[in-house]
Amino acid sequence: QVQLVESGGGLVQAGGSLRLSCAASGRTISRYTMGWFRQALGKEREFVASINWSGGGSTYYADSVKGRFTISRDNAKNTVYLQMNSLKPEDTAVYYCAATKGLGQIAARFFGSWGQGTQVTVSS
Image (tube, rainbow, N blue to C red; front, side, top):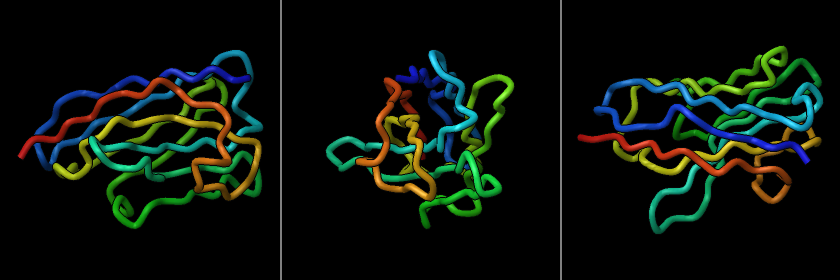
């Protein structure tokens, strides 16, 4: 229902930073919980971060990115961001933005709308 387009990926050195953007259209994201997931080559898709649409906008992070990544939303711009700092080679993956109307969701199966993904490559 809501269309999502990621951008901001690229090649960066270990220790560097990137900010991913997820632009939504078709629906406002103000009533959607938004999430970021990633999938490395040959690996399963995994949860990265999410932010609720209600309940104070609680955020959730995978242990592997806590303290380094920050998810945020700008409802006026209908955009969600993922600020990634202190990047590591193991962060290399295709990053996907997703949306759900549920709260506190971290499992991919609960997200019904997905973007095409943006490649993030972190070199040693």
